[in-house]
Image (tube, rainbow, N blue to C red):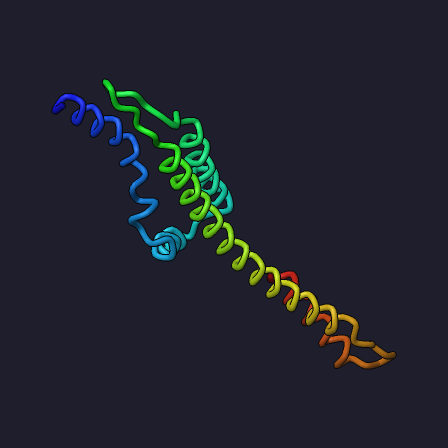
Length: 142
């Protein structure tokens, strides 16, 4: 019996590498990840990491026999896949929010700049011309 118990514990150890999925807080983990100022490629790598976990867990057998015992791990595997998916979706949602915010900022800048550039410059209106030229210099600087 002790041998079977040891084998069961040994088998279940393979799932312990994923314990961070249910122990760690997603929001804190994202905040920590974000504090490193990741690039878009690093975001993609992180999302692929979560997908990799989903695929790896999905590839595990749903049952494992030890002596006379048959361990049913289908529900454990399913839960781990769902947790990995939750992490992936949370990180993706945060990335989407940030990208949307940045895009909105760029849109507002383009809208404002366009409005300033469309200012009519009449004949001899040097102030209007200076205003448009200043706008063009600001665009080049950005």
